[in-house]
Length: 174
Image (cartoon, rainbow, N blue to C red; front, side, top):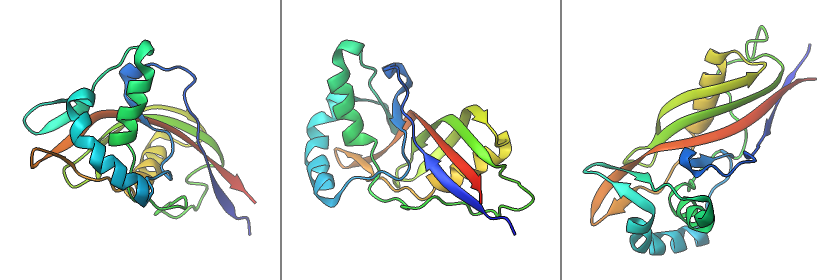
């Protein structure tokens, strides 16, 4: 009997186009407890510097290439999850080669709702072996394991929208 092995490969775009609000390249990376404490201390000071907010939601400000350090700080404060599943997850059975053996890379958009969960996932680009529907389900399965610290500004909870991510995975037959 052949077994399929899921390997997750992360990649970072080689360009620094901040207009994409690229926040996620690794859905296994999370803030440590020590880092979370510091992030929560810094968020109130950085909110006006990093975010553009409406009545119920915010989005990250767009930074020029000259301000890449500001962009990195803002993403560290608002884009890192506090909880994740450290292993690659597939809720659907891998039978009949449904997931297809091989490398698949995706780019996607998403938001973080007021409860700190990912919502509104849209698959933007797909390259590789997996079919679009399966790649979307696989991506959503892994993203749903993430939890974020809710965004609280002046005692009001906001969603964080218009974020983007890129990642890859490789399913290997053994």
